[in-house]
Image (cartoon, rainbow, N blue to C red; front, side, top):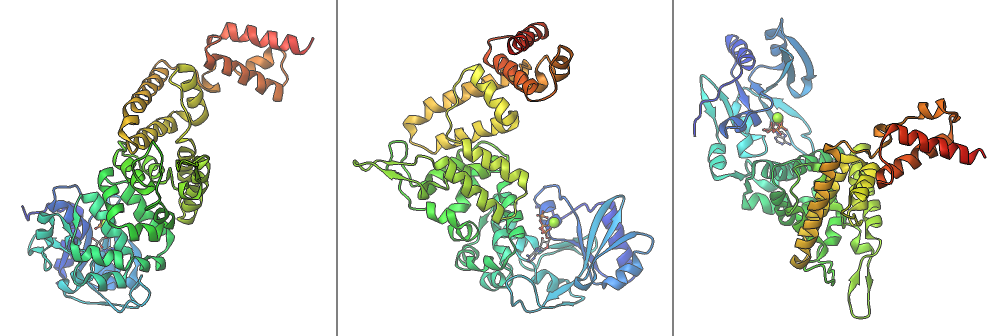
Length: 454
Ligand code: ATP
Ligand code: MG
């Protein structure tokens, strides 16, 4: 592995300015990790022996935001790019599983690296001194392992968010989690109750946004206590048997298999797959022969998904999208153009393709015998939808070849009747009973008008 990192000119300039005044400075954390892995860092953080006051002095002439003077951080802005510069820090005692009670500044880079979460995040680099890597982060990159700096239990007791960060980095980088670190994550998962919902949500989103659904499913399985801590309803799915000809697995393992089978990279779709059956344990009926049914589970799952996402402070738009997918995940979609046009009208193209992805994933999590037939039907529906979009077929009022204004021109008064007529015309066009042609639509509108005014 090459230890040479090409630091962008602007970050290099800050390091040079600090060096000229007798300070040491390095790029640190994520950018070093990503560079060593051949990935493009999305930002470059700098750490230095200079205090914030000294930095303000040294960076005169550069725009500086006083981000967190108390915590030792200033942000330099050059060419619109932000560089967070933080003095080497020692974190004091943690009493709330969240933040150190106090921080002290130091001029020792190793002390600063010690307070960082994982070995792969605890490396620093500059062109003069090369790589500072006291915890063998480079070895853990080679071994593809997320491992705490120092004692995992201590580190997770200090700051429980690190538990979620470990899952996120594992998902994002495709790394395994070191055994001792993993044990501590599960056994200290309760500490997450001290972390704000917003921060948990943001990590969960990062996990859902990582490259491989298979890895996400594996992590949920391996860290069930962690996921159950943040979404207790997930715990209720574990071991909840389905006793149903469609299913070989309990609700959780069906869900995780569905997630594994999810081919979408989109976190909204993935979240919907994770939550699609969350209501099943609260909604089941057992026949005399022991067969279990889950009538109405779509509705209950939607209500629960809504509650969970509110609790985790998801934004309204994301929440509505996920809930809509959960709501319709079990709806029957016929594979004929008119039905597909109606679905496109009902939920829009973007959501419809997501829904097909959710349905495919759901099918893949079920018994193999059902799989092929259902998957093929979904494929046909997808092709139909693609064709409808490509041919710009009409499935909403925007694409209807007649507008409200034209109805007013032929005598309609603005209001409900006009709206109803437009909807009726659109319905007929979607059904394929009349073509989307202006003359024909006008003729039809006139005849409706005349009928109503007879
Ligand atoms: P990303 O690519 O997600 O930004 P990153 O490694 O840069 O990854 P940041 O959250 O930006 O992560 O944090 C920057 C660095 O600060 C980390 O690499 C790590 O060294 C340190 N760090 C961040 N959060 C924590 C924490 N909760 N506990 C200990 N160290 C942390
Ligand atoms: Mg970062």
